[in-house]
Image (cartoon, rainbow, N blue to C red; front, side, top):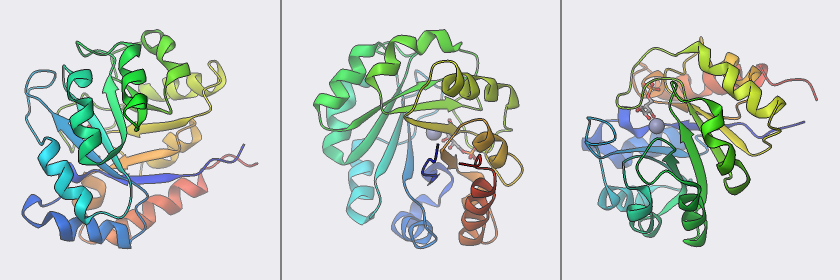
Length: 223
Ligand code: DX5
Ligand code: ZN
């Protein structure tokens, strides 16, 4: 089965004082999506950005925004993020409003819903969400910070999603993806690869993005 590989640089590792430039840089290097990490200081300790900044990014971006909600109330804030320009909105199953009705709400609002799962949460927790979502985002670090080490044990989950659950949608991995780990993700069924530090932390972010894509393509299973 052929799958479209999507590279999604995470803006969390970008220079926020030069956001428009940083968006253009990765778009020119072929980014398919922009990954935007929203943290509320409750679901995770860190606080990042809200709908106002998403709206500003939307104004300068050409590619769709993949907004990763690490917040306790994804249903409450879904409308604000969709209005701000999120094309994909992923919510955590472990959050207070992380039930399947949040997927339905996001779709009704006109965005593509995705369910996100922490490394320590079993796949069984998202079973009821699978028929309702376009994306499954499997986290390969604990949510909260960029630049953490990849947790290889989560690859069993993406493999099981494809092979046992027959999930045919977009399967996204987020956290610690770099030149050394990207091919393992693709071999385990992922087709959407988020990378923060490996792109924005590289001396040449464009070259790093192109290298990630080449490695990902090289790991695609034969048709
Ligand atoms: C972590 C965020 C990730 C993070 C990825 O909570 O969800 O998107 O920014 O950054 P790297 O690729 O540096 O692990
Ligand atoms: Zn993320």
